[in-house]
Length: 348
Image (tube, rainbow, N blue to C red; front, side, top):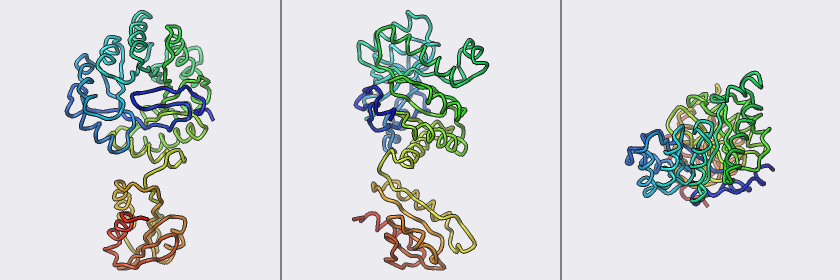
């Protein structure tokens, strides 16, 4: 499997590559200069399961703010840099565990070298990022448009620039909002560096989750990818929830309760949609690695829930608690949710 053989890269106290667990990333949407708000958001993301956090560094004030932010958080911090090489250097001097740059917009070789020299001195990895929206004109012309082949060539060109400067502590990112182009680009790249995978500019919670699930599913299921971000036009917490579910669905991460529920039909005599949503919200803070089923009728509920560890099924005024396919308790419908929670809190 590809990811088992990628170079191991240390980011703060975490490792990616070489078969290490796939880590989940997100990016703050606060002003990095606002330390209090940025720290508050990062702490919430940590609680949700974020492994690595990235902050935009558009100003020198933001670069300097990283020093105070680092003191108050518990996960590695990545500085996202565009255009100004001095911001990359300042970010590293103020504690960034990794920097994200596109050497193509940093400027001259001398400026790139200045960044690389500081990274080398401090042992800080560099994520080399290339997006389809910023593909070089000559590569667009060479491949008659924006293509997976062009993305890969662009990324490897940037990697070789840094390698030629004597540094190989690198992570590669090749992203596109075109799901199939992104998947093909990852299949084509043949470097030993770990890959940061995501579908860039995926969209809103609805469309972004669908595109990310399909794209990441295709790529990760081929054994490609060492760290991921689900890029959504929404709250960063939603990115973490989606990423965890994608990894769990692919069998790439354990932990967390999986909720399955039947579709509604004419036999449904309860508010199944409301109940399923309440269960999904309720179980988020329960640290079990089990499957919970929410079924809409007491007729088929026990049979449909047999593959789950525990389940509930609702009827007219009454509900069933089902464990490993067997009915273990009948309770009033309005007590069904509390009964399930009590059972989960005392799970053996």
